[in-house]
Amino acid sequence: MSFNIPTQIEKDIVRGKATYQTFQTGIGGQTVITVTPNSYIVIFGYDFSPAGGGLLQVGVPPTSGIENLPISISYFGTQQISFYSNNAFNPFIHHVPIQCSVIDAASALYQVNNTPIARQVYIISGSDVAVTVGLVRTLTLPGCVFEPIPVTPATPGFMTYGGNTQTPAIQSTLSPIAAMTFTQPQINNYNQYGFAAPFPANAANQAFWTPNALTGLTEPSNLISTLGVSSELNAVCHYYLNVHYALYNRAIPEELG
Image (cartoon, rainbow, N blue to C red; front, top):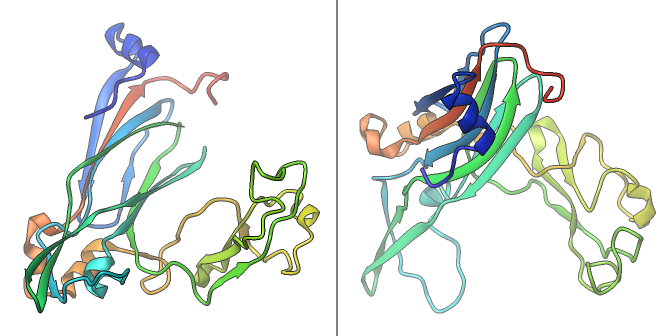
């Protein structure tokens, strides 16, 4: 792993106050880390091997301009991991490189780079933690709302987009089935920006997707099984996630809870 155990947690492990644990999951998009009563865990990092390795798609070579990736292989280009417990919800988005090798003037080979990705986190939970992994296939349906952002105390001119002539996306419906709309620049004090677009229902202040096969988070193993003969049986095609955490066999201290 390319991250360090936090100093205090390492001291607790050495002194016997905590136990170092790993949790390995993969293939299916949903799993749960069990936390027994009167104990808690501190997740401090994970190693993520993205889905899509071993899958190849032949397409036309890219031109000198900008163009989209071939559709099926592009599904693996953005993958989301989230941790949900009674304490918090923590989503993490990963862009996964798609490599292209030109075969000849008429064809090219596209494949997913599933080199493991290490990330340091700090998530405390005294209850079971649901770990959800999925592929993000669609950015927004039906589309974004674009408006200029005025100068406000939170968005000063020149330092931010406040007062700029550009029109950033202020609303993006990332998961239409759940009617969740990622709202920018902020949810609190939204009216101070004077936007023509009304404040959206079910506004979300973070960018994340909820599960839905077509317009949200797509479960990896089910999608992989539809892409080719026996691909679901090929272990290299699937994601694998190793979660690193410390287990404390006592209730969460008040200062941490």
